[in-house]
Image (cartoon, rainbow, N blue to C red; front, side):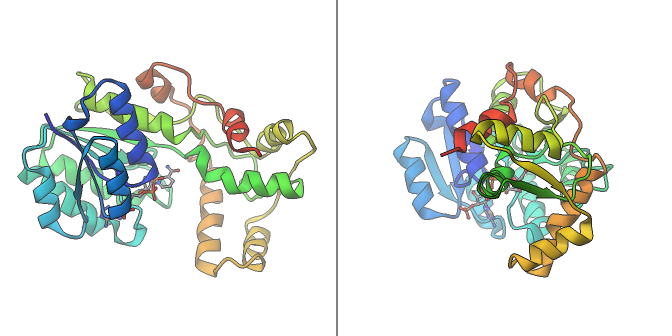
Length: 285
Ligand SMILES: NC(=O)c1ccc[n+]([C@@H]2O[C@H](COP(=O)([O-])OP(=O)(O)OC[C@H]3O[C@@H](n4cnc5c(N)ncnc54)[C@H](OP(=O)(O)O)[C@@H]3O)[C@@H](O)[C@H]2O)c1
């Protein structure tokens, strides 16, 4: 048996390997892939097989995928190059006639104004066109996206965002990784599309209240307009492109595109998702 994990050198992929091992999968059944040689060596120390894979190099994909029973395809972090890279991954998975492809997508990927969705729509459609048996895990936001905001709020007493009253149904990376492990190892998920998110959605006011509870002093939510937010971020040293991206994502949150709680994630992993306040506690000094 061979289960290939792409992006295993990254946070989500590494946690997926850990969850597969915790569920009793023999380490020798796991082929952990990525580009970073140092991180691949760490994975090899944990007993799993490893291979260098670059999404831009089809020969490396063919070498890793040939003979695979299932593949966890964790989306590329190279946002501007995702479509050609993902097309390579899907084509290689089709050539390998893999029995199951588990892909980490984005909320409502095929029907949303979320700015990150077009690459995921492209990939979901490529997988369907290739006729590969698949499980589509439409991952919502990670708690971990807010580590820096929490630290800043703890230091300044202010949580600044242009999300208005928009809510975020974030969840811990580990919970999303566990869902990948479940989709890979349990029968009956092929053909499914799951909208994964935390059990509970929070808004800026609740973020500030939870952060206050953890740091033990008042933190207020500064609800700013998109224009004010852009000015604050560029004054803090962010380049215009990055600042615009952050503000656009906050706009998506304001519009409710990351706030839905389907319950799919908790049901898949069989336990409640980690509450945001517990994530804050885990990173508080
Ligand atoms: N839902 C969310 O809130 C959210 C937030 C951030 C990211 N994401 C998405 O979720 C994915 C996983 O998140 P993460 O936190 O695990 O990201 P991460 O820690 O940055 O890991 C990204 C992984 O992608 C691999 N990768 C990037 N380009 C590659 C290429 N050309 N060929 C092969 N592998 C490549 C990296 O490999 P090397 O390091 O070995 O090069 C690494 O293993 C990201 O890639 C991104 O698409 C989602």
